[in-house]
Length: 192
Length: 291
Image (cartoon, rainbow over all chains, first blue to last red; front, side, top):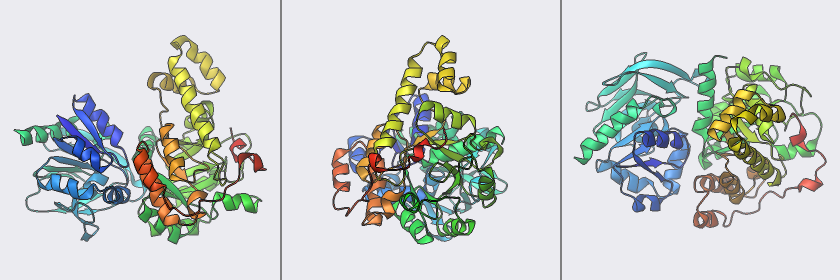
């Protein structure tokens, strides 16, 4: 199994470490050739700054080919900025990146860094897990075909639509690997 | 400051990795930086090259000016306080700054002590020339470290010296037998537990960026290849001929710092780089402020 991790900016190494602990091969995606040189069973869009990642995927020619992969059903997991990359709507406007997941998202929804927080909360099917929110967004509304997987104070912070899994929090900066395990389960089901 | 808050503050620095933090003096510059791909901006009244030229005492920027920049962009906003000036830091915390740079670029307020950063909820980044200095700042509560390359010069030599010094000292610590660590802590003038962390992990317990004297995509890639996890670019962008283009090129150079084909393309036709001053020509070594 080979998982591609978008490595243009942000906390991609943390995701790679989680995957390596789960015995999975990882390839970094930094430029177009990286997409042709490997076959991917799934892709992770990490946390970072969504404005930076959104610009770099375009400047580096990653936007079209990655969008095709996702639309063709390749499992994809977005955390924080990665969630923003997938969202159809951001802050009431039209999503400005891949815009392929039927969710409406509010950016920096908890304010500046002083609003960042950690909480133990339940994620559907995984039990109570640590959730780390760093200048995080939350999901304001989801489409009919998008099951909600976790809520904190009535705000949606994890959801799934077919091959797309998103969390507003950062499982990759904790020692808990259950969300990554859940994603690898999606990957296995997809390749069956 | 509770431990959760410190973890969250280190986590924010992790999200900035692989990115470029740019000095800006106006909301307009902040917007240019954001659309060029800056992962954060440093709000200050004068960029280091102008601080150097103006001389005199240099202080924290006007909170109103910083607020204007906070309102102009959605990325994190950082600002500088003088070394040891904890009230300037309290003021920046009151306006909910995302990161405080306790910086040698401004005139130091205390010639012995740095700020006790554990007293604050907002994160701090501090400069370091060597490993001992980096670990002392971390012990005081810094959630991020950067090199102390000579600001406002466009000369990369000091940032290179500091980064090589820190990575070299870390490699040496890693190779030491455990019974020598206490003595190493004494020599580094740093706490034992942090020395032990570096020995065990081969890296700092916080993110480490390069700063000071970066002016070109090649400079940024050089620092990344030397082990920086991201870069600060100060005067190098808005003192150059074509800030938008140079900023965007530096952002891409940090992502693909190992790809010389891409770096060659990025280095083309950027217009004039900041003129710069050589290390030997400067009167004031800011890196010598605070140790």
